[in-house]
Length: 199
Image (cartoon, rainbow, N blue to C red; front, top):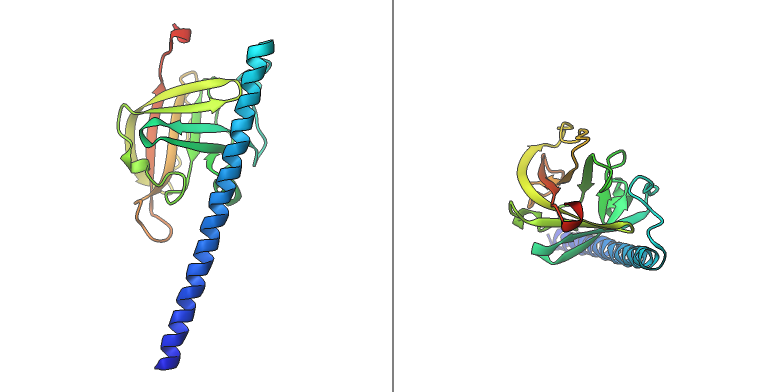
């Protein structure tokens, strides 16, 4: 009985250690990606200010694993790095941009995904009318949340061309507190907010 108790304690400590290491590794990767994204934005701003913009939405096409920009969520006071791709390695660095979907200004569906226990842990707190801002080297683009829904994890209909209408779609696993591979996905739909420059 003592041996079994000791074995369970050791196993628990090992699991805690592994979990702690993974959490630290993910937090560090996201911190590095955010710093890289901020540098990209600062450099883009300098180019626009000093020489006029040299990059356009049409030309913007980061490679898989590249840091692309920042997702700013005012309600959560959160700045999250956006990384091209949605593989595990990409999602460990931040919010993943689903390959093959658009970026702001490209007039089609933009899909961003993130883990419910890391970058999107507070996604359930967002409400209709809240704003989301995607910051890229060629500009900032703000969207207003117009819909939320829950779909089956295998539902691929949420990723669908919307051209010429621009739609921002955020996805994460659901339920938020589920342990293991969650059966559903939580979907947020947001539409562009008109600015004075658009009018």
